[in-house]
Length: 197
Image 1: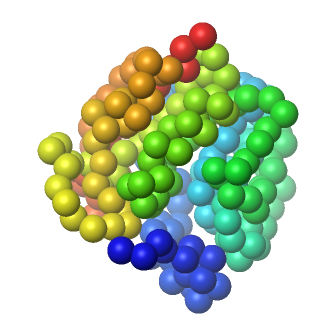
Image 2: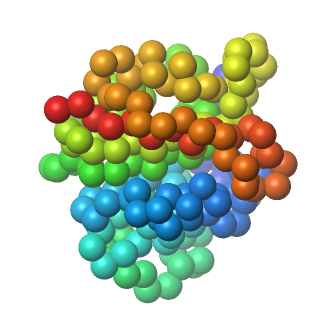
């Protein structure tokens, strides 16, 4: 399958993945106090609902997407937000940051990548997440075992992510999310990973 041209999809307004709000799993993480103060990264942030949800006076929230149209949609949808929120049009795989991140939120980014890019995704996460920082992956569509169904979104599971992350991260929890966006019931698992020192 040819790589997806995400920029063209945004320009044409073909964004069926845009659910119009943050997923319930992120709201629950915030309620539980799992998201720390400090630097937070959201790769593939799209319209930026998750950036808005994560915005807080004690956080610097950075969103990355390849589309200027997505950034424009974020600017139009969200007014003034607390804390520092930065939206960068950039390639995740080439992204460099002067400091690491305390928390990374990955939802519908990993599953949207061509499977041959997954090892590179893991390498970038190892570089960007600070020691003792947390990588939160809301895995969708979750399959165990993983089928050969073509994506995006490509089927994923926690075993696959753990193998990619190798010994650089330890698993903190993996759990099924009961409350999801409509149509994703039973297909999401939240997995939290701590970066090893």
